[in-house]
Amino acid sequence: MNEKSFWDRLTRIQKELPVLLKEVPHNRVGTIKEAIDLLDYLELLHEVFDDLWNSLADNRARHLEDLARFPDEKPNCDLVAAIVALNAAVTFLRYCPKSAIAGRRPYSYLKILEDLSRALSDLSEGGAPAPMLRPLTIRGRRPDVSVVLGL
Image (cartoon, rainbow, N blue to C red):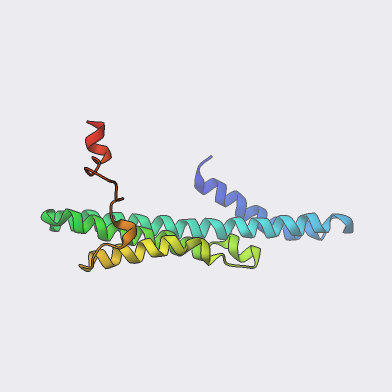
C-alpha cells in the first residue's frame, strides 16, 4: 500500500465513522468517538512530521546550494546547516502533539538542545566555543579524534 492510498482510506474512514455513530447501539458510541479522536490525532501527527521533514529537506537543499556557491566555506556552511536542522528538531519537539495531549509541555527536556543550538550560533558568529563544545581536558597529550583512531 502506498502513502496516498493509506491517507485516502484514512480520510474515507474519518468521514464514515460519524455516520456509523448514528447507527450503533448507545453502549458502543464511546468506542467510535474514541476512534474518531485517534484518527484526528494521527492526521495531526502526520502534518507535524511532514513539517519537520519539509524543513529538513529545505535545509539540505540550501546547504547544497551554499556549498556550490562557496566551496571554500564548507565548515561554515556545515555549521549553519547543523544549526538550522537542530532548530527544526527543537521546534518539532516543542510543538509536538504528545505534549499537547499530556496537557503540559516539558520544555525542560529541550533545554540541552536549545543550549547546543545557542552555543553553535555563538560559534558561527565568531564567539568563543562554549564549554560544551570544548574538548575534554585530559592530562598529557590530547587524544586523537575518532577518525584518526579508526585509521
